[in-house]
Length: 135
Image (cartoon, rainbow, N blue to C red; front, side, top):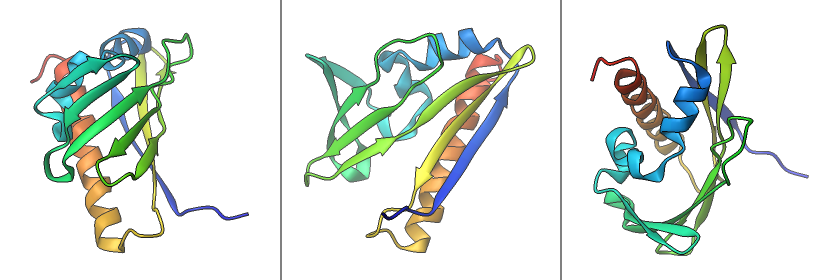
């Protein structure tokens, strides 16, 4: 059984975790903080379609609403690649931790992995700024 190199990228947000989850779980809000989806997403049945910028058109499937802060989603790219994105919001006293687990897929170079990590950190910081009223 194989495992991939993993990195947990996180940010603390000074808002109740339920509020963070409520905002971040709405695909309509992703255009404001997930820079790869700057053009936004449009609903197509159980999936959402968007322009993933440099990666082209994407189809996104989100985990159903839940009381656990799970925001996992899969992204299917035009070339057929499907990437799972584990994303969680958990309580941190009166605030929240938002954690994204980035997995280094076999075809990724170390440079691409580092670039993805930096991109995700930037997006999480944008989410923090919005929710803390600093955007």
